[in-house]
Length: 186
Image (cartoon, rainbow, N blue to C red; front, side, top):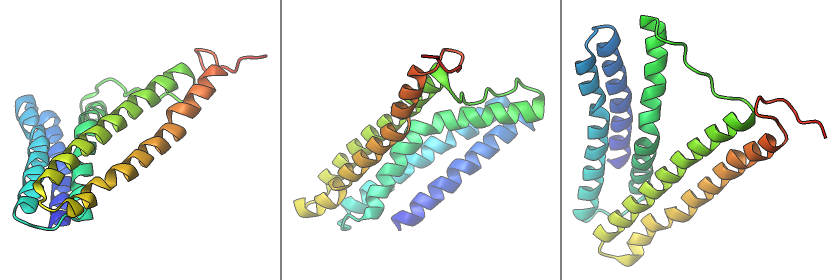
């Protein structure tokens, strides 16, 4: 049931995003577009409520419950920037909006980008951990609660890998390049 709810929330996210941008640019109704875009967080709150209610009703915690928490953390942390990313591209394509700025490839601009994305990942990790802790409180059996809390270690490992493949190599490369991305000669 929880896996199905996560799938429904993911579909709802994209449906609300497409409907909101469609209303904004195809129907020229920015207010309706903004209202439709607010549907995505409402779907996330519904998933959280359903997950909590499921556990509170006595369901044994599973990886599905932990995945629901991770899904919520990621959508809260990355959702707004994903909406902005899509909005810029749709505006450019449909109403001659400004050309979207490409992700920097090198130098200090890339480093700033990597740190910003890593900050979102840390936010997602923190939100997920807090949700897992809250859900664990709903479970009567401490052993069952470990099914949920045991995911924090895996999420921390993912965060560490993100750091090692994102901000860390970008920082090393930024030290060897100039502000404009050119390689410093020793």
